[in-house]
Image (cartoon, rainbow, N blue to C red):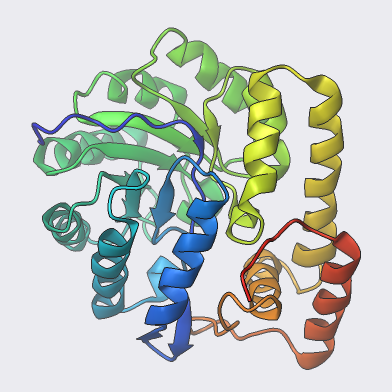
Length: 310
């Protein structure tokens, strides 16, 4: 367990895409460009090697490159989180140690995603990992990818583990999320974040601490504005900005076939504005040219305040 102070986590912490130049080749220049673009939008943190970062499809070498180069380029401007989820406890811990060695602030850990777990086994896994981990741990509930949800009973126990400092929920289940907020009420040291960006405003108005919004790769300032409006209970502004975010989901994420349409749409849109290529990590492939052109047209119609320097 780490003796380092846990970072103060709140607000918009985008799950950054991994810019690729080819198969198993990190695009170093694009990585720095995207980091600067996102931080320039006023975000409150950065999350590397999550689902949006295609982490399970990357080699250990590329994952380590992402960590090392990101930590160096972020240089303490915002808290840096790294996803370490794996089917192997040892590989997860090795990436956590590598992250600690390079100045990362915290790791994000979901259940191992191949074998379904009973809650007792899952709780023990998280407790043992947090006890050994050299960095603070944020739990990640994403049952669509992991075959198991982190139950509220398990969370009740885990939130009292000293090195577990927060929770990201990507279940999309608002009843679960509401009960999670009740469970963690009064625990300012245990922030709860929403995954699906379409639910960001609702989640913050309910008392949540922020969002891990994939669209903030493209237009970070929009999500920061929505978070600020929700924190200030500016309902009129929330409605206006929420409408724009729902339009992004429709016009950019809905072009490709589900369930990968979101990720392909984000990378494709980012390629059209010069942030990175739309190279995907195998087994995914970029959108077909006709769908790329639809994204381009939709992007122009959306008139987003992207603000990418030419």
